[in-house]
Length: 258
Image (cartoon, rainbow, N blue to C red; front, side):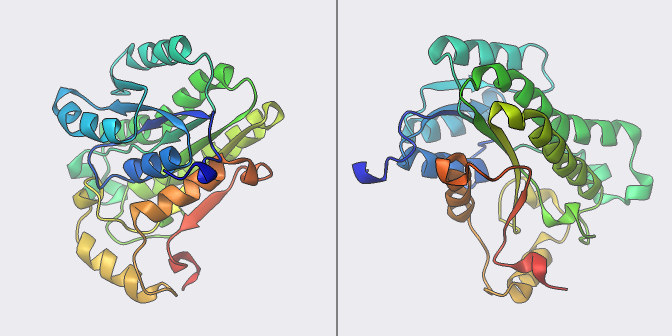
């Protein structure tokens, strides 16, 4: 690790959403650690722990704890541990989403109420919860980042109900940026192009989506988790101190194309 590149030394952050080495959240963790940040990492459950702990070790995570946002008390326990360990927090990266498969693969018109509620609960409301718990620990300001997708803004075939859910997430980002700005807390949605992650594998005909994005993007290539990690590292840094409330596309320019 090059000491001259430690521009995030002293910053402490929470990363939620690592499932394996292909996760966007892991790309963020690697980049942030290389820049000198200290990290707290969560895993979903006992089954996921065996995959996440070795990755947490690779980025020297100070805390590794479970977080299922649908399990009462787990978020409170996580932030109690962060408060005890550090007493402060400089950034949070929220990279989780879920929708029951039947609702994800069906029409928006046919989405069930329980499916819609669960998708919103896990994919959107959990970001609000994280922000609420992080706010008192961001005594000197901070950065809150969540992951969106182009389907929030345009109709993407087979993205279905996750489009409206991500649209709500992006709107939430703007409102929280407004509410928390006076405290020096910046809030962004990062919108990567399609990536071959475990979560994306649930989208029907995902390979066709990958091929289309590669052909349409001006750079004619897919982005990877390192690209997203580098962008998030910049957004956490003081170099992005005047940016907030944005949806930042990391997609090789695909979003500008008709």
